[in-house]
Amino acid sequence: MSELSEIKKGSALREYAEALVWALALALVIRTFVVQSFTIPSGSMLQTIQIGDYLLVNKFVYGVKIPFTNKYLFRGEDPKVGDIIVFEYPRDPDTDYIKRVVGVPGDVLEMKDKKLYRNGQPVQEDYVQHTRRFTEYDNFGPITVPADSYFAMGDNRDNSLDSRDWGFVPRSAIHGKAWRYYWSWDSSTNTPRWSRIGRSVH
Image 1 (cartoon, rainbow, N blue to C red):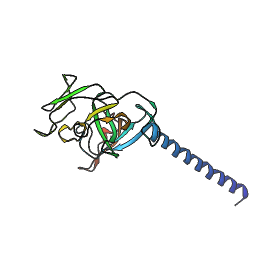
Image 2: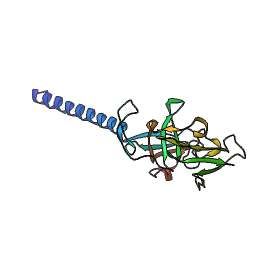
Image 3: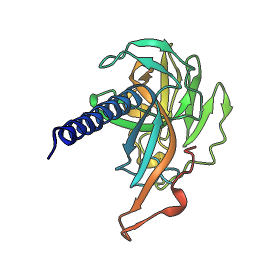
Image 4: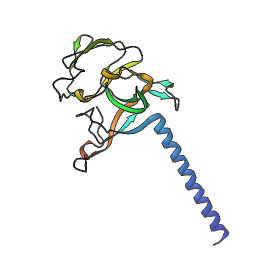
């Protein structure tokens, strides 16, 4: 092999290595600041989100955090009622939960016989399912959501450990807003749920 061929080969390898490094760096930046994938292992959000759904979560929409902290470089928009959020479980920050925001700072919430009231008005929740006649969480409140905190509950209301059990979600603990399904696998039939892939989460 000629010296020129060796030089060309070395140059090509260096270019491939540089491209790989840049690709990995870009992927890390995107994952840290923009979007991250999450898998759904439980049924607390049925029927909205299925067990075996894979989601992309928009981390940028609520602001950009300093890596490895819950402090913001800048704050984006605040979570709204109806947003489906991924956040650190308040009792174990190493575990991530996904729930729907039902109360924002200042809201007064109450539940009577499974019916949610916000600021004295009944809330229409077409996405909620009930599977049991009675649970210990069928009634609570009234309570007021404090500043920089959110009240979140699962759509599978009778089978969800949520803010009714462990309290409010601090804004700083929120990773982002559930955005799109990029994959979905039905383990009961061992087949993909093709119709869900690419759909927005709402």
